[in-house]
Length: 463
Image (cartoon, one colour):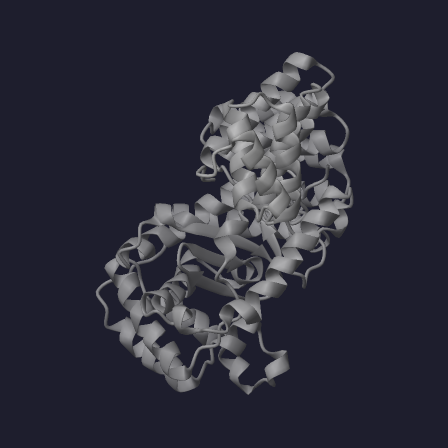
């Protein structure tokens, strides 16, 4: 199964596994959900100080990375979304943090909550895109997949929010305050908006989506610049580590999303890590695995404890039909970063692909461990279903399929497979009770309820 950022995993563009940038970088203008442990961690390091300044626990916020060339971002209760186009347009971490602070300012002011049409206008098409991506991936056409919804429950309130100029100014001021409270400079916030000052003269259709919903003006930019220049932390600069991570994030996105461009953008003679990383990923995306692996081996010689390089190596080997060789590097990635569920999912996928019952059993164990941290990860549930099916454990396979469908929002299929699972599982076992719970919360039919009643199943279970 193919995935571009599997190490989406990487970009969950294409869908499948959840370990590397899972995405087949295609459909540049389509929105697609991306999962990538390395990028998500960098984004959290950028966003967490701002969230804490707003009295929001970062652990309660899901960072959503959306594959799209558009420049956009949003913040809503329990979720913060960043488009890849925005990351690639920011010159440094402080500019990105400025946008995130601005969006957090909207959230803190309750602007998104007051946008009554947000759900209807924005989320339906977004969720539809994600759903179609899943179907394409499952059908064996990952290159046609628009996205993978591994955590669909988080996305109930996103969408196209339109703010007034007054709300924009208030969010500017709130964002500036949050940045300073977090010990960060507000210069990047002003610089970012100044870089796109020309957007106000464009026709609506030609503007970036962000500036269609967040009206910008020269007066507003000057007022913001004047405000941040007076704050105590204005002269603070990004740390060398933050700059390096920002460069790595941009290079990784370029390699996965724009491989043809990355090959020329990042000089072949360049010795810096981001350039070589981007080229390795780009060669992988351009179906030149040997050239990619050669570059990765050189990088691993310098950074033998980098879990994302081992992840990328394993991803390439797996996707080019070398699953037995992929096992060792994927094990290494997990040993270096045992708390990353996406890396365990990649390893689990490889193990269940091997023709060895013990490996399949170990793969099941890895997938279960990943679900302890991301219980709603649809990819892990789908792979578990495959693994149980290989072992002829039909009841567990159907239960895992029910879990998969439940987590992508297909209540009908979730109910159908849960009912089938109940017929094959021992009555009263934890698995049987779990299947019953799914039936009860997945819009059961009257006949389903009658059957449960005849069996004496408790109707008080909760999912």
